[in-house]
Length: 189
Image 1 (tube, one colour):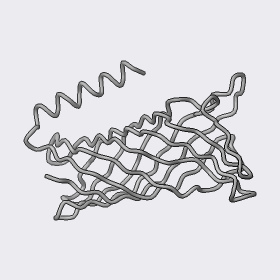
Image 2 (image 1 turned 90 degrees about the vertical axis):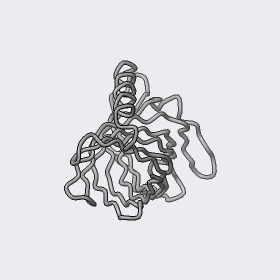
Image 3 (image 1 turned 135 degrees about the horizontal axis):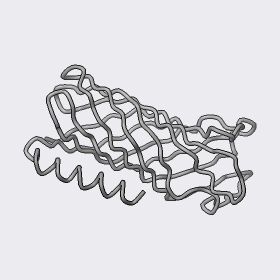
Image 4 (image 1 turned 45 degrees about the vertical axis):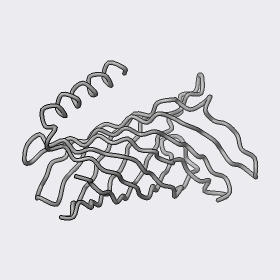
């Protein structure tokens, strides 16, 4: 895992040096519609948010790489009682390949690493810490669309397919993050 992350960082750094004059940086924020899937059967959508920074590194006219660093609030609500909520907060690092179908429209896909910041369950006014039974790293894939306006504003919609985050010893149940994100961002340069 560490070797993969270091390789990605080295590759992005190399691309940044090569294309330094063309790199765009910016910020983004938006809405999360998060659920927990797999063997977690009793959840419904938790509405939350994400925010952070991004860069766009052009490789060619039709392709670029977009690394991001985001705070992302995820989890799920109980389908029985809306006051019962699983809250999972991550520092998410998606590294997306962007195919530019037109000058404005792009198709985005790539891996994402989420570093768990907190994991809590709010049940009947009590808060339980879930960090001991939740993996500290969430790995998954992102697929989405982006639309860039001429003034630097961009709009995006994507879905994050997480892998298993269950860290309960001797438990074979699979619990997966699933997050639909709608965002608005702005590239500074």
